[in-house]
Length: 387
Image (cartoon, rainbow, N blue to C red; front, side):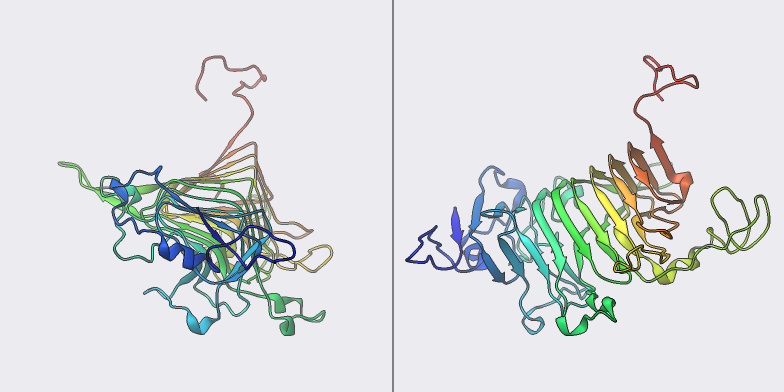
């Protein structure tokens, strides 16, 4: 175990550190190039004592970084000029790697962040690291955990005022999971996203084309096997949306409202949402993303006492044929106006809800609601039957 922290006070004592920064400790750990051949029980631990650490963390495989206690260790990326971007123009504060874990750490997103910045990213920054070739679904950074981590945005004090509460805007997103990855466990993670569009958490898998002799090619999605447990997501600064125009029941008109049915430029027209697309979580091109015992909220006027502004924000957006599972969770748009797509499921995608609620649904044909027990029309339990 390696200990990181400021020098110990001679007056009060404490845990003596070996390194002043997390990355300096990471640098002395031997790099495991071939993940597949390494014994996953052979690990390193970096213990971080309370303090503020201005640095990027580039995790090596099979390393756990843990704060001594929750809410006592704050990590923030250094100034913009000293940071590099990937070939896609993106960067992060914490770069996760194969079989890594981050615990009891607060990630503070820089106030001068720009689009393409993230708090946590499943990306190895060590070119020689090779993922498991025998498990193509895990060739990108997989088998990682994040526990007791809060991710929140810093703001420029000079930008904020009573007259302009939206001066708190920060485009830095919280989490990016992408590629051929699988097996991610995030527990007690809190996220606040302060921007007008985009999603705080982006989860994007890979579509595979499977060749079948004598049959048409089959498209398959990667299995993300990703679980958010007891998490909290806020996206309360979204651009105010355009409310759907009501039409009479079974009429022809320009929109659609609950209980009514219409043809025209209404809820079936995706362009109506394009300028306002944003929210908490977006899942695309992958299967098995679970949200358990969690809360996700979207709004456009966080500082209004009754939140009367309408928003087209989505607490959960499922697209590209993806499949998400929501268990014991609430997807909400607090206030008197809310959103008409708190749960937004693109055609061809699917979401299953167990003991959960959503303030509104768009794409209900791809949503399955499961109750406590399988019963018939009279409320009698269907003994031994599959519903």
